[in-house]
Image 1 (cartoon, rainbow, N blue to C red):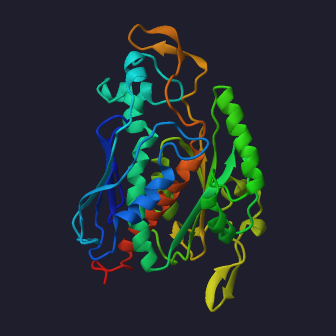
Image 2 (image 1 turned 120 degrees about the vertical axis):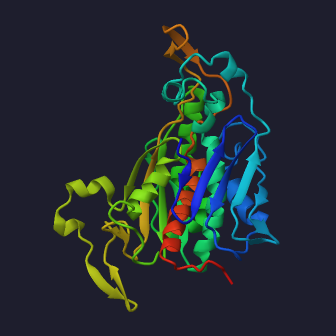
Image 3 (image 1 turned 90 degrees about the vertical axis):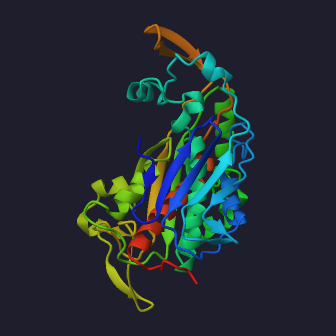
Length: 363
């Protein structure tokens, strides 16, 4: 397995959905950064199970446990180990039907790669549960980004084909955490909630799109040609279970544009170089250009649905039927919003440390 992101700010994920815990080890974080348990917990609470109308009924406390690397509320320069304990897992369904491959899950591919030795309960390493570690690492990354004024905002743009109409990042920032779906458009939220409830009654699930913005990013970040800004950020975002698509700026829409329509024209604004539009999403040649980095992430419908589905019994190699029992999200999108912003923060923090814009000791 490959479980680490970053070259300087290195984040290593560990744990399984129904194991003892899930967590993260962060290496390369400068010493002297003020960090409290509250700084981490406030981010963790945004993705906690049981939060919101679309969420699983799994009632995990998800209280951060700091094992190393933070002393007297400051980072020490040593590896930081953060975890949350799994206290409300129920493996009965997974034990009973372990031979039945769940459609849309990684049961078959994991079985083939690891010879059946992987922890299959709750999806094991392939569960959204592991994203708790990403969010904890993202909380540390955000504290570092604050030093140079980089801000990250993410929100629910679409659920079940219902798209929010949002005019500005300031409007998103103001409204997103006051909304049960982390959608800054109240009208769209009402429609989304109705669609989610309909899917729940039908034993189905919904996917959607999350949009993220990184503001005040310095120009010049990125390491072409292989460690590009888009490449490394997309890699981090694709490490989130259920993510099936990532686009920056105008994204796939550029294929239908002319050069004269797609080019972002340069201008001087407040004494700085900027562009009149941002079709590039803040990145040119794999390097940040100083404009906001904009990214949209497609999240698939939760594959665990209560409808009967056709499958295979991998022990008998015969056709079978499966109806998934248990506690599952009808729509993972709202809980994935803080995970997307965390992955953006982790990626940017690594590039900023590579560029030496933050010293090894923060004072």
